[in-house]
Length: 287
Length: 296
Image: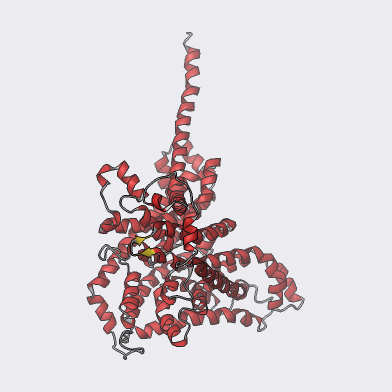
């Protein structure tokens, strides 16, 4: 008889402990994800600050130094030139892309004319062209007309990837705006360009900024075209990673320091548009 | 639907023209140029201009070239490994992080970082971690599994391809997880609760309910990843340089070698076009799935 209260007292405890072990298991899985995602980045950051003699060990504790950064920004590496090239090329390509793409995206979003659907799809599939198909003719053309190894040459080629991408991104943002205000303005006699400038643009500004950030990141991180179409003067920072390969093999501490310079601006920019990251990847296919 | 009510001036063309001109010049010009080149013989080491049309010779050569066939196989293997790993890991991470709590929210915020690492840097940093003696992953794996202690990862053909794929998966799986978390969030929780009430096991719930509901997103993600995997190039240069031997020589890398190491522009163009055709198939599927779903 007096065992009854005991029996009823046990059950609440057991789910509790099972609950606890389940929670620990879930936390452990999340920790494993965190390790998988962040460890390579953490290791690169640690290596960038390691003194040379610690790089070829697996130590986590060492006296951090800025020597590697000093080395990559002095003779013979002079990565500041590459940083400048990357900045000039990525910024120019972005500044050309955004207004051009905005105009096209606006038309694609607001007007449906014969073949507009097909044109949109063609713009999309340019993203799937293998870069070598683009690079081979431009390599030959640029060598003939003197654009090989120039900022302008690389900007032109980058437009081929960034403009179609930006059109799709911006179209997604414009599609999401209500059309009624524009229609009212149209009745009042505004031209398309007037409507775009005075009504749509202010509303779609967050989308414009997001697109600009993605365009900049794409150019900043681009490697294939830079490898093929530059040699010296217009080399970008991505290629700076390669210049740490010397006779003794790769100087990992310098690769890591260069890598950090490559990575940090992109991290800051990416984080600022993280809300749109998935949308950006799939060009609006998945929101 | 809007065009009937809105102006139909020349403004439209003016807005569209700059983009179409730029896209035309930067893609249609090279596309047609390399198409023509693919039927010509042109060794840049011998002449500054093409030596003339040779018909299908470059294409016929490709199908008799064992290194080309090797690169096709490498590319397909790489694609299968990296796409399946990306989707499975992406789904796994999404399911782990889906439950809302503070730790999960924090880790979710980190998911965008690997993708932000440039492909070239991805290749170098994974190569560094896999180096014998001092590579941190080499040491960690050797400690956990002593029988793998002496494996020189990037010197063995199978492992080199596996790690190349892993470095790619590292960039994409977290981002795909983010995408899948979004898709999971749009599934009504009542469906899961109902299944639980009916006594369904977790595995049953996943395969019978969650996965089918995620299917549209998973299909788009798979196609997109397939297209990008078939184009793999940057990491091959910085991580394995096609080696050991030709074990990681992807199609794009082989085109690069033919074009810019052996300076055989005609042959490289033909190879690049073959890759383009292969990609075209998947691009077609992608567009079809995308538009089919939206009912346009």
